[in-house]
Length: 82
Length: 82
Image (cartoon, rainbow over all chains, first blue to last red; front, side, top):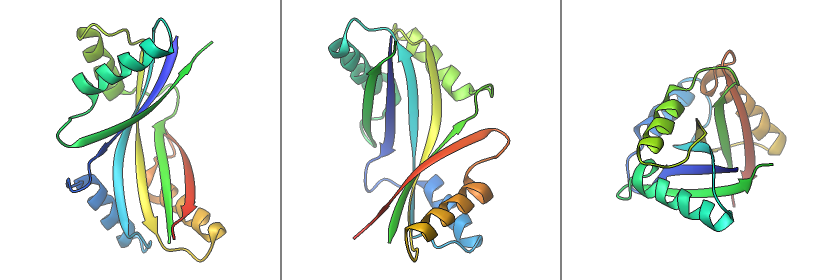
């Protein structure tokens, strides 16, 4: 069993309305906040034959479902679960 | 200037509909996915006098806005930006 943590974030230049709203709310609460970006993390437990297979599976999951290639970047870490 | 990365995730036992939907979609695409959790990461650039002040600011941001103490856990890392 493997566990992957995948972070999907917007590519630079794409507008991040949730980040903008959060920045505005922080300012209203009198915090100094110069820039806020929001991204999403998927923690997925899944079966794979080995580390290489696990990595390939995660790449496919990102390309087919989790990330939009036009506007999203993704990074991930994978570890084996005992 | 400091930059914090804050991950806000649901406490165990709280339902995660987005994770459940993602798990179902992955299964429909014939992936093996045993468990999916979704959390949110805020990347915030802000002013602080020193590292201790930065940490205190982030704690306050989490408590006042970013995390709901009833259902969310949060973890963060802070680094100084040159």
